[in-house]
Amino acid sequence: MNLTSQLIFLTCISCLIFVSCKSEAKQTEAIAQEPIAMSLPYPPLGNQEISKLYAQAEKVDIIFFHLPISVNQEDPQSVKSTVLYVSPASPKVTADCKPIARLSWIADGKIIREADVYLSAGCEYLMFMENNEGVAINAMTPSGVDFFKNIITQVEQKTK
Image (cartoon, rainbow, N blue to C red; front, top):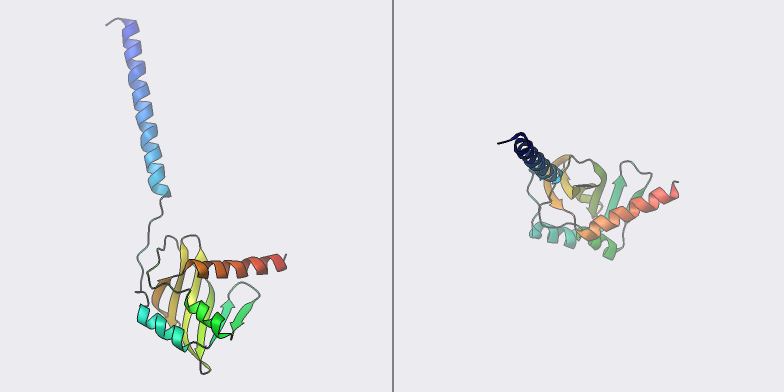
């Protein structure tokens, strides 16, 4: 092989190595961007428990942890709607999440169920609480996500 042939050969090999390294970097980057679902510490409430809550709930209180607002609902249709925000499925949690609010369903003047509301990227779920300890975790329906996002947007617009 003469010198020119050797240079062409080395240039081709270098290009192949460079291209294959770039391809691996893109694949690694794509994998790194794909969210990884976290294991959940509690099972979801089942359809029977959700139906029972739907039948019993008379009032709803929502206390936001970092917003200057709370929401109280006594209209039967509104109260039932908040129960419909609970999906019987387990959520796909892909981030370390912090609750934004505590949602309480009330019947006969007593709290019958409470849930912490999680609403951020990778976190759209309700963690049901008993004695301030988690007992169940359910995905939030799209209508529930919209409801809480609308409240947050309205509060942020009024506090500007």
